[in-house]
Image 1 (tube, rainbow, N blue to C red):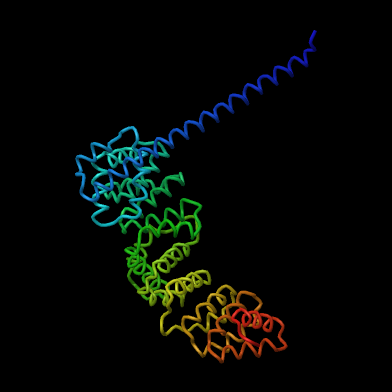
Image 2 (cartoon, rainbow, N blue to C red):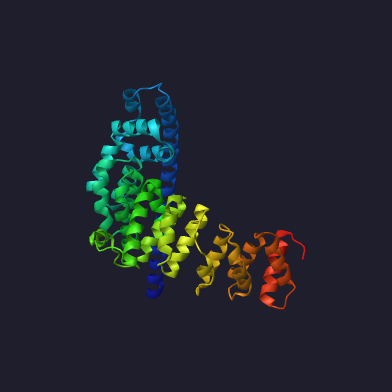
Length: 377
């Protein structure tokens, strides 16, 4: 007679073996179906590619290609096919592609999903309709910005960014910063899809910010305009920082005077973003005085000021750069030495003298930069 405890143990082992076998079977079947599905999509993609290129070249008309590509069972496949083209095309080719997507009901299908689909379907619909610059769906995408689901906020923001409706920029920026865990960099990457068309809007907003900071306006309209965009969960300076980063990303040199004006009243973190924007643009306002920022109490400001000095070449700041060779921060010392190495023979001579001098930190960084430059001591 089998011991009852042993019998129970055998039952448990058999049940676990069955469960593990079923799980492995599910994994194998799932992988097989994914492989089959991928092979089918690849075949369809090759077929559609030939038809699509013929359509763009005028060898097939809209009715002909729509009849050959229309496939109600495979709307997601159609989206996957068109997605890379929509990221690259513009002008008449984009317009022809959008007309085709409307004709094969791709736009209509995802408009319906945007309104009545599940969470994941709404997110996909926002990305699709945004990529197709479907302006009639902008209102639906804006409504998703207040969702508690970050996936919807992200997809709606990206859809709005690609839709070509620059006036939605502020709403999308607020939602990304307030309703998601995106960093500055993450929000900036999504918002960059708006393109340079939003740059003048951002400049005007920052100009209003300068007026408020300086107390130069008695008009309350600027404060009222800001109300819809006030941030609830993060520092309001994050809003300005994202716009500054984007102006740098777009290399929008027309923003230089505005950034300079904001810099005078900004907090240290915003100053750093402005200096980074100058570096991205590759230019600084002609009359800017970097000396206060080279002597700033925060090392990050001093660091980026030393890097930005190379855009001005202000000879009056060279004594400060020389002093910064003894800064507590290695990065400040390094970028100050790099700046001096680009200040002509006088800058190189300062580095040579410091390399042989008694100050250990200044000597080390001066020698290091001179060796990097291939300059003899």
